[in-house]
Length: 155
Image 1 (cartoon, rainbow, N blue to C red):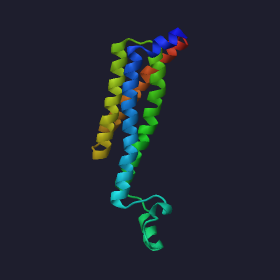
Image 2: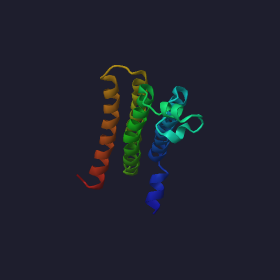
Image 3: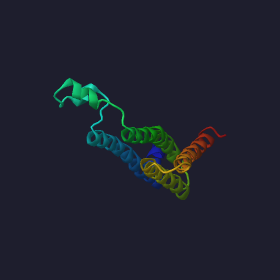
């Protein structure tokens, strides 16, 4: 039990907590951004979301697909698909006792790649910019997973 307390009190764990919190907050802000786009563009995904509109015909017109709303929504979905694994694998990685400088490199590069990915996605910059940002984050997560597996399973 003392070892677990020591690991949680380590600088690596504190660094992980900081960077994990940053990307989770960023992911949460993407849901607010989706709501903002839906409200400003008057685009809703469900009929019940249009309850403030008087006529049924007008309500049905508001339930549609908008390319800008879908872009934000897909960006948020991409965050969900990448940040959740980072948090889980990053926690396990932090508990393996890596060198602080290597851990910081992993955490910072991942966070940077997610912010770059979001900016590139929202500005609709040409490929392969978005793919590179995605790939860097994915590589970092796989690198941490490799460390976890080689430490825990002695591979």
